[in-house]
Amino acid sequence: MSRYILTETGKLKNELLPAVYFDSSVLIDYWMTEGMESETPTASSIKKNELPHLEIVRELLRSEERVNKVIEIRKKLLFERLKVHPVISPLCLLELIEWHAEAAFKQIASEVSGTLYIQRKSKKEIGDYLKRIMKMGEDEIREQEEKGRESFESTGLEILMSEIFLNRSFAEFDVLQGLLQADIINFCLTIEDTWMEAFVYAFLQLGAADIMHILFAQHLGCKYFASFDSDLERVKDIITEKTELTVLVSPEEILDIL
Image 1 (cartoon, rainbow, N blue to C red):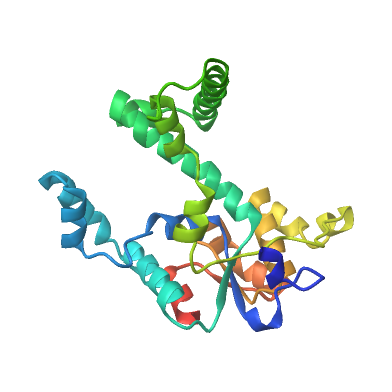
Image 2 (spheres, one colour; image 1 turned 135 degrees about the horizontal axis):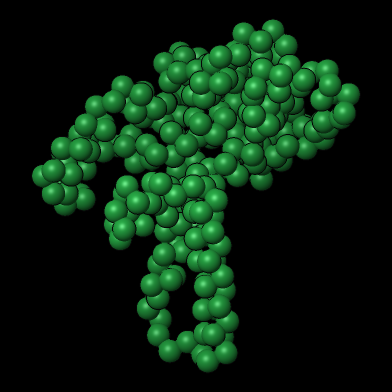
């Protein structure tokens, strides 16, 4: 489906230009504010049957300026006619999947072991837990196939896996609404490109994923590049000089161009 928005060379079609590339830092904030664009604080509390102290924390989180601005971005993307089309790449989705698995597992684990204990775990340790859960799920499916499933109720393991695995249908038809998902086709990164165009980004201590986001945005023909990553803000002038991408580093800047 996403290929229909591209030309044969892998650029976004003219009718989708100008475009803004959302990197994973923007995408994750967009994900976290899902549903907030249509709910009021009061309705939200009633809906979730929150205890008084949880309601207070919820209101504190909603009072953050950045959260409110990202909610405004969601509203614009979902309900208004846009001057600029927002686009994400497969790399954005991979980083979203990684973030979601870790965040969801930590949230569930904190209810069992306490937040401080689980927050001390490294990404590798969390990855080990997730690997064990995946293996347990595979074993359970195999056992059910061999013995024949006796109940249609979800097992505890199935419930756990549904919480930490990112559901594609839910993502595409709910949370990611308003975003163009673009395949990266006919993209080439040569040794020569690495030593010439991309060299300076690595030299200035940008991570490989950040560098690929920049190159993908340039390849797609985007006019804007949006990121909440402080590393991108630090070198935004260099990015603009080399690519002519206008780098947006705050929700306010994104709202201005939409």
